[in-house]
Length: 219
Image (cartoon, rainbow, N blue to C red; front, side, top):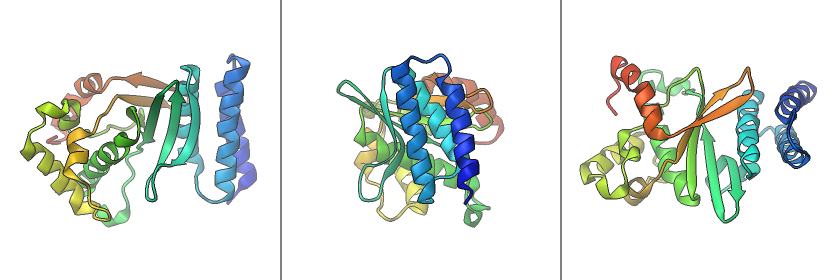
């Protein structure tokens, strides 16, 4: 653990993000900065993920949200970014594409299952749910989550549950969680330039569909 290096890096990012912002927004971004430092002291965050969190947090703050990070939602779920505006709640989960060594031979299935599990488990705790990823990665989002619940067929829902159950059994995901899950938006994070761009899921699918087809992804 290198607290001095972590603090310097987070301060550098926060300074870039607060440049030109009104004082209220600066205070909110600096709150996220200090929260990350406290979490790092407890060995709960790492610098690469923290940079992504504060960039996304700054985007939401600039759009009028009040933001917290690493918020406990239940006894097993902690979300990356939790934001509120008026009566609305917004949860954003960041995905980098990392998969553990145990899944070296089924990396794609594992990643699709993790994304599906997150959409289904987290979105019930908020009015809007989003996924975020660095611009260097592609999120393999099953098309089922782009349909309204009334258009989701039982066999499609079961297919997602079967995949998720291969990797996440404690606790198992419920069919209703998949059926009613919602995905509001995708955030593309440019780490070097320090900004996140919001895009709707359908637009993201249209941008990445050809790449997914070439890659042999059947979602």
